[in-house]
Length: 236
Length: 236
DNA sequence: CCGCTCAAGCTTACACCGTAAGCATGCAAT
DNA sequence: ATTGCATGCTTACGGTGTAAGCTTGAGCGG
Image (cartoon, rainbow over all chains, first blue to last red; front, side, top):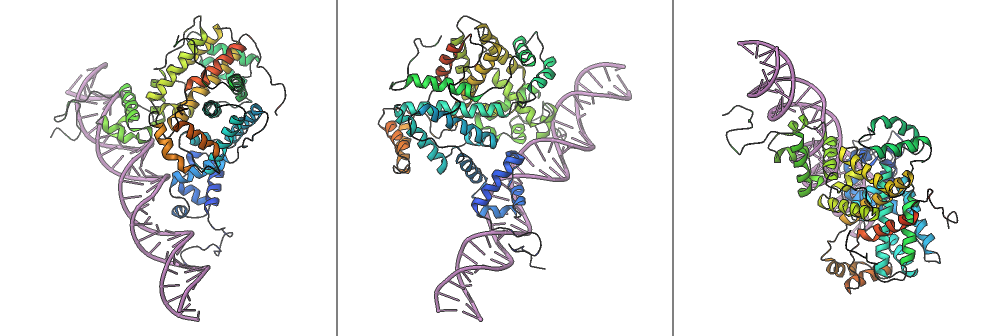
């Protein structure tokens, strides 16, 4: 018997690389990608690392810390905006790159949007974004508003799309199946929309580019104007 | 001793109204409003209702069912769009009304974007929205895209704003406090932005109306056009 | 080479969670 | 009066994050 505690080069099983914070975070990301963030528990994660749960606490302070690290790892995958001539194309690429990352890591949107993120990758990402917008002629205040509006669209869209019940391919078929469940009397327009999808006149697939380009075009018009344009009337 | 089981009109304590699904949902909403959704457990909720945890299961199938009910209660508070002349003003009011509800119930955004919601209030709300947009001259496909973009903005913005570390009032003071933590060398633009806030040239408060009006103005231009406008070049 | 220190593994234990299974009670209908 | 059932209750199980403290072996000063 090689003692009660299995060593790194223990007698049976393949060799186990030493546990590090980086290895823990990487494993957690992979785990959440494959089995969902709700399945990610300290014990389950420890198991795939062939370690006991409490050993993880030598490398992360608590689970929140683990999640913080995962988020920053994910954010680091986003293409960082550069200062250049075409701010619009740059912001567009930024948004699409972020969206693609959020699709690769379906758990990331929720974590980003529901916690304070001050990891190094996030700070770099934000600073580069503000820099690009400032360079394009926006004031800092406007850059702030623009980033807020764009990020709202990116995260909001990805979240709504991610939990939409039907994947992109089988949408028409699914619509046909759900159609009888939508009573025409009470919800005539939702039903009409579903019929458009079935008839092939509408894919039913929403694209980030739609709202994104509306925002970018609108921002273009606002460029160099220091103040937010006010509405003519209070509400109505 | 009035038997092992305390009756509704038990000897001590104030009278307990009979448990109903509505009462459970209402109490859950109030609980989550006050103490946060993460504090809402079946046992804690049962306690405020002066009941045992398992009794709740006579009125909700499981916790997910409870959350579904809470969401629909919240969605029912949103002003339902009406078919009228000014679709833009209607959509604007819809967005602001939704935003206000989401601020009243800070837990709601997260639940709405991270689950499938098919409660009656949600279906009514969506049908009325599509109806309004269709009546305004949008095709069903366009109405779908428009609603998706607007909702992305509403939920995304509310989520990002809700977990932003600092409340609206004390923003300048907080910025002054955090400023030393932002190294000028590595994050010069974030620092410059913070200085704008401290100097009072920028409130630092982002408004839903900013992105919302960009979308609405853009949608106005797209009205009556059946297809999504394509970008001139593929990416760049 | 000896003996000490300490990082990084481990075990145990606790309070909390959602909820399955089944019992107790009292009202409603027969 | 009897029965059945809705609605409350108790108990118990397997899961969670993590505090407290033990064990082991590698590194290092003497």
